[in-house]
Length: 487
Image (cartoon, rainbow, N blue to C red; front, side, top):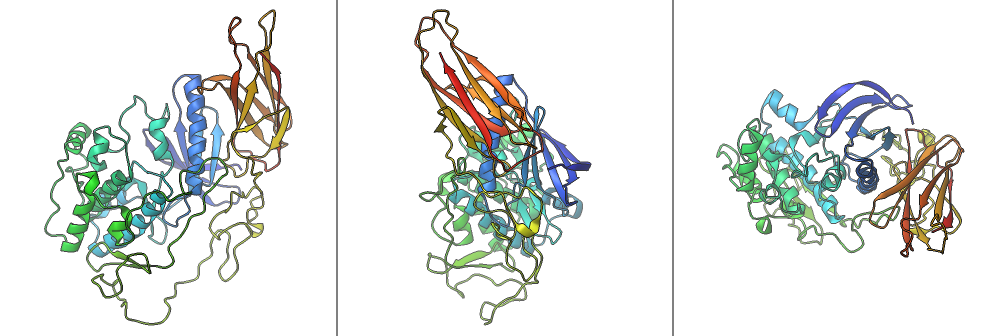
């Protein structure tokens, strides 16, 4: 799909963000990630980012900004996401001052629920901060940069000098000390973000302070006391999220008053390739926003608190009122108001790894994935497709070392992309080092050759071939991959 850039929205350490429109004229945000390093490092970075993009695509929650597309553009990768016109929490607080406690409570419930859902799938954000909280036109808060944030410390070119991943003013103490980021670190960062929303300052002092000072204060756990002008409920809940010891910090679900912990459930670990785990939802989830504090979630039959046990009602509502609560009917991307969702969608986005390649919302997500597992061995010739749009396929090739008098054994990899699409085949060894690559466009095959590494030794082993899209053109049709030769 082609995107028309409208204007530059911002620039950061990872690249730039542009406002653009898609083929249907709908606004989208293009986040360009500039990759740096040697050709081998850039190739590995590109492959890992694509895999992390699949993780982001697996996070289906109304408060998590979804990935619409991933475009390979020269040396850059471009993440395509919905555009939210309400700006960031950071800009809003700097422009208008701290938010009212009840609004902080509303935002807290929404983002904690999103964070708990991500943690149950084994995904850690690692860089929650006010700039990563976006508001839509209706004022609803959303978390952005899931997946990408969790990939940055694995990817050369996204951390220029192997620095700690995160933002000093909102980073958990253990993260600032270089320890692995866990769900507990996300809880701290969200608590710091909510404290900023409520007070206009971060837990380690003014966010405009020298980053080196903020990093030192974060690493030593010097969290400032929350002002007593905040309601007691807000102070106590934020203080628990800002606990310096991660082992004593509550999970996102516990802050909400929900079930014990948010460790990944069996079968809900990080998504790889096309095998997406099925999310097991709570039987019933009732969100109650506090008048002056972060709200609790009341869950039927999962250890939540029953109505009337101390949770405060949202402004203007009562938990004792009977009868359904209705919300205004709104058109969704794939579900006009009052109609059923389009095929292979939940109304908002594609499901079950299907893809929308023709741009026709009435037929939903018409492109069907091939369901071939990553790591499948190539024997001769194979066919598969790159559906959904951010899909990356990984194939393995078993190579024999047959006697070659002239030591010129060669393995040839030939890729033929379908008409209307461009694709790249990258060949790596077992350690991930790039050996060769080739590009195919619009049905014209491209070939890459890998020659025998040594003459005297046995070079038998396994190669890996990664197939990815190049540019913005996509096709749901099959490509073919052929492997011939030996060492």
